Image (cartoon, rainbow, N blue to C red; front, top):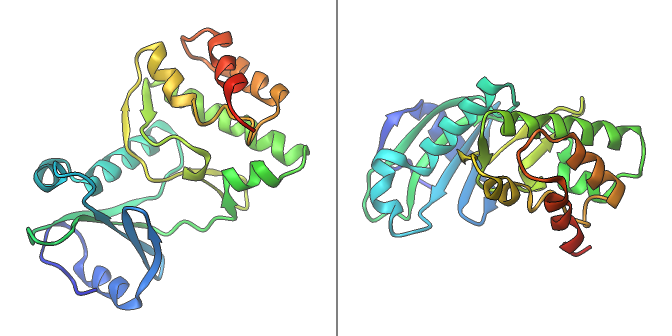
Length: 217
């Protein structure tokens, strides 16, 4: 892929080297390139509205701002090095994001599906609950909340990725935020109950447990 015409604060030399290295991973709506300790993410337009809003609220800008905000709140997320808008109106990609390449062991979804009931699993779920409470206390929610968007490092740090946050002020917002976390695919009933009991949110605990009861496993 050639370097497109860009507008923004980003190191184009590093972007060029990442592009020259070739595609590392293909995602449903983005391409990932890696170079040295950098990760380059190129966002594909998903909606017709992206064509217009990329100039003031591109996908790259939203992820950059959200990751920076989460880091300020005390959550671990990749360091952001810059972002830019693709100016070519005929290009199917709207923006690019340059960030830290995080070294990680696995994603939390795979660990919870495979990990036995041991001390490490309990520790990861305890850290996860602490992370969730930072969201609740600051009334923000991840707009794509699922365990696949949480990396686990060798030191059991949780790293939040694909960040795009929104206000979370009502019980309905909290239920929506928790819907993909309270699933039988990942948690036992006892684990779900302990997680729900540890949350500092406004919703009644039974409403949260109802999500788990209705999930498929």
